[in-house]
Length: 191
Picture 1 (cartoon, rainbow, N blue to C red):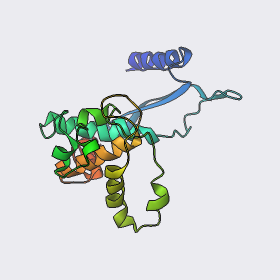
Picture 2 (spheres, rainbow, N blue to C red):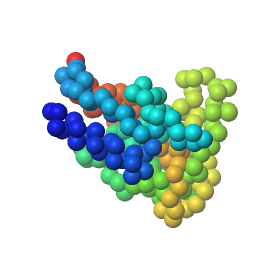
Picture 3 (cartoon, one colour):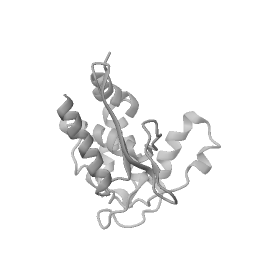
Picture 4 (cartoon, rainbow, N blue to C red):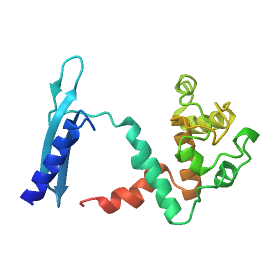
């Protein structure tokens, strides 16, 4: 185990040295025991570099896209529940506005569905009852004007991933959180 740990440590150091990332912290546990816990590089570079610490907090905001939403879609695809070229109307089993009729799962996953990158929906939704917010958000997503025709450009878009959550919940019959728990988190638990 020691040889493989030193190889992992070397990879962490090389990643920082080559500019893949400014710094990193990696913790590996096996059977409820920490077998590797190391840091490398810097937690900030400007205006002055500060070394990484093992307890440096990281903002994981956009990691929910690959580590939750995309994983769930991949699992549903693997099980034959969804197909990449299905349209929004087919996936949600609703009538969608004409400009969104050709949006497919493939377009949503690759950020080329035509949605703007971001919209301040929270400004309106914060005034609504919490239990109504998701439904209202989804109505807004269907009515929003697209920034470009689906499939013509790629623009990193939070809105497309909001649509993906809706699709996941519609085709699976459970919330994204419940699906993740059942197919990934529970099977990976140490308990």
